[in-house]
Length: 129
Image 1 (tube, rainbow, N blue to C red):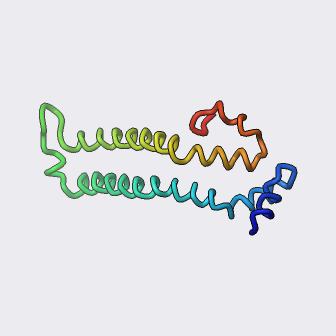
Image 2 (tube, rainbow, N blue to C red):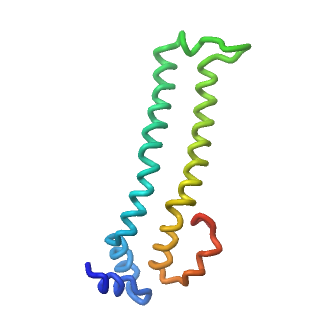
Image 3 (cartoon, rainbow, N blue to C red):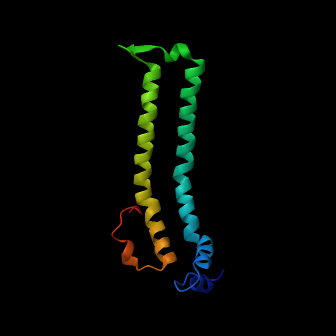
């Protein structure tokens, strides 16, 4: 699609469906998807592997998991608490990553797609209302 055709299709006066279809062929949209996947895919794989380790050790390495570290605290309890901690850590890391890499580009594309003035989204932080 030529740049002129893309700009005509993204014209705010045009049909919303045509504008959305044209946006999918925009290289900035591909960049947005790539930057999102650059974070989501490795972190998801890592977290699922970590969770699977916890489940498998709980099922098959009961002696290791029942090892008392101190008082009533054993390895299984520490693993369980670390599951929660890693979940919150990933959420915080994603929020920071999105604020830096994903949201600015998404805001630009949204503004162009909806035809809103560039300053209309300036008051928002990180694409969240």
